[in-house]
Structures are given as structure tokens and as C-alpha cells.
Image (cartoon, rainbow, N blue to C red; front, top):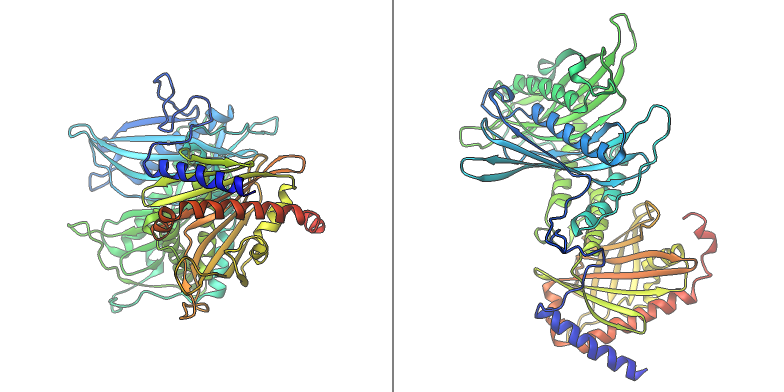
Length: 598
């Protein structure tokens, strides 16, 4: 045993030294593909579902400011994404939803719009399509990112049920998007419940400071209603109205409603999730209704809904779509101007007013948590019920993105335990991997309960369950022993998020990250530690055989300890992971009744 330990230390010392010097990288196992997306023979790799569209912006495409109309851009985005979805499905597809879109730049007449779309992941009959939009000035050769979007399309055949073939991701980017798509799909499904919970359990802070409350506009004054007749040019080859055309009509009435509040030409900055509840066809009359739900200090939310009917005498109208759009009014220096206060109508108007405030809080939380780069976020993010969905999403997605990276360096492989390292900017990440003769679902249950971790991990001295948020998320207070020469033990407040596989071949996920809780502030007794991204990916490799992978992204504060204690650290990694294997084997028969729920 001592000989094996010495071998571990020697090999890991060599492996880590080569990582720090940047000389050793793990080779990709997928064909002969390189990590930059090119093939071995020099041919540039291109995703088979990728579709590109380039459009020259003409005066007929622009608004009164000479900028590309967002409605026209949405039509081009929808068309490009639909063609990508149909290329994969091999049959007609319809738009089911479009996720939040944040517009970074406007596009002026004479510039070129470049749109790329590709299928990130296919589920049973639906697909997530990722879209990137950039503008190009052909005279100066400058390019700008305009926006990114995610759309869901559903494949449709008249006579048979569609079962889509799965996407096989090859590049690191494709693997990341494929893996995270399942988590984004989960977040879409719980979005409505998130709004309800926030309204029921949280006090919404209204942004009334520094507002000119003497200038009040009744919300009813901003109401807009318009009707459109769906003609053949508005529909696809199946006779269904283009989703992009409906979105363009919605943007038009929303802009009118916003301009009635501000008495100026508003600029659309964000769109919050178009959701198509049903199709419309050629010959339908679409009634589009818009109203300003709430006006904040520098922005306003406009709600839009679309109803369809076939004949004038038809009493029942079908609800086709709803969306919420955020507008601002820019001064000559492109700075947002202060907006007047809006007075909601009693009843439904007050409900829309409150819901708009809830959506704004969620939108700001989501932008902060989901859209931020990892090195722009603090290690510990404040936890509250309004952001739990997005913290959980970020927790799972960060671990999936770390696992999907291609350039892991194999530092050692002793007794069927592999240690990989990855140096990336200011982080050094570690990845341990082993095969265990235990059922994957059983390993998932055992490892996801952090209260049992002290049984095999000596770095966890005591674990307290602080809050069971829901079935998949829990918050723990962890106390660790002293590290090095530090006389104080460390403590952590950790959010543990777990996910079952979405499809066959997906892993079980257990993701850990630090959060802050008012009930558990820092105390003099402990030194508060933080973890940015760590956790387990658990793959089913066969009958009663499981691959367990552990990931940990170390911050700069941990790197000094690594470089001064390579041999000691390697020993700890190896011994801890072997103790984890023994724990799984010793307890593999304990949870048989619980496995029936997985």
C-alpha cells in the first residue's frame, strides 16, 4: 500500500508540474477533431444542422430612426432557426417558444445582418435551437454582436408521430450546449410557478424613488388593439402562420403602447419568452392587444397577447401567444431617460402591475446569475426564494460546462483511479474518475445526501441540513477541519442541486456551490470558505457498474496550497476517492425502497 501511495505522489507531482508549465494536454477522443473546431486534414468543421442567413438592411426594413426594425429581425431569426430545425428533423417544424432576448446593439440601414442557427439538442419531438445574430459594416469591416436567442421547435407530421434522432455533439461548445439544454428546458417548464411563488411569498420593492409622481399616466391610455388577416405570404408551406411574423406584429403593437406612455420613440431592449399556445393558419384573423403593465424609473414593461378567430361571427377566440417586452427611451447620448409613473386600473390592471414588478426582479436576478461570466460573479451569491430557480440552474450548468471541457490533462492513473487537471485563466480544476460495482441510481442517492459525506470524506467534519428547498435542491452548513497552519476550522454554506438523467446516456448530476444566508453569517469561531463549482457526474456503464466522476474548480486562494503541497495533495485525493468507493460498496444495499422513485 505504501508503494502505491508513493507512486501516486510521484506521478501526480510530474503531472501537475507539466500542467503548470502548460505542456501536457489530454487528447480528444471524438474522431480526429481538434478543440478549435477544425478537422485533422485542415478542413473546418461545421455542425450539420447549422444554417446561416445574411441580409442587407434596406430602408424598407427600418424604423423612423433609420435602424433595423426589431420585428423584421425577429422574422429573419425565426426563419433561420426553423430551417435549422427542419434540417435535423427532416419534416416541417413549428415555433413553440422563444426564450428571453437581450438586444446589445442596434443595426443601421446599409449594414449587414448575419444570423447563425443550429440545433443544440433534440428531445422526443421538440428541439432547442441556438441562434447568434451579428451586424457587419462592410465598409469598415467591423462586426458587433447584436443578440443571442434560444428557440424551441416542434416537429410535425400529418400521419405519423415524430420521434427525433438524437444530436451527437463533437466540439466542446456543442457538448456544453447539449448538456445545458436539458437544464434550460427544465427552467422553462417551471417559469410560471416561479412567478406565482414570488408573488405569494416575497415583498416586491417598487422603484418610486426620484420619480416625478406629479406626471401620472393611466394605464388604459396606453392600450392598443389591432387586427391582422393571415395571408399566404405570412404562412409556411403547411399553411401555418410563421412564428416570426406573429412576433413582428406583436412588436409593432407593443411599440405603439410604449410610445403612448413616453410620448417619444421607444427602443426595445429585451423580450421575455414568446410562448406559442397553439397554431394559426391562413385565413385566421389575429387580434393583437398591448398595454403598458408597469413603468419603472428608466424602463417599462409592455404586455402583448394574441387571439385568433376564423369568422367574424365566431364567438370563441383562441389564445395564440403572449409575451412581455421591455422598452427604454434614449436621449441623444443614448442614455435612458426617466419615465412617467403609470396608474394601473383596479382589478386585472393591478395584478399585471404586481406581476410586472415580479418579472423585473426575476429578470435582474437571471441576468446577474445566468448571464454573468463565472469570473464576474462573487463566489457566494445571496440566496432567497426569488432566485432559487436560477441559482440552481447556474449550479448545475457550471458543473456541466466544466465536465464538457476538452483540454483536461491526465496527471495519474493508479489502481483504476484517474486524476485529471485543467488550468484555465485563474482557476485550476481537478477531476477524479473511477468505476464502481454499484448501481448508478444508488450511488446518486448516497452521494447527494451531504449529511453522509463525513462517513468517507475527512474534509467534512460535520454537516447540517439548513433548508430542504425542494426535491432536488438543499442548503447545508458544512464544517471542515483546519487546513495547513490555519488554527481555525473552515465552514461553508453550500447549495446542493441534483438532477436525474434527462435522456439515456445522460449522467446523474450532483452540483455544489457556495451561497450566503442571513441565518448563517460568518462567525469568529470559523473561517468562512467558499466553493465556486464542484460535484459529481455519475454515469451508468452497465448492469451494476457505474462511472463516478468528481470535479472541483479551485480558486486562486487554493493554488498556493497546491503548488507547495503537490505530493500531500495527491495523496489526499487518492485516499479520499478510494474511501468514497468503499462507502458506496458498503452501503449499496441500504436504499432499495428509495430506488423505486428514480
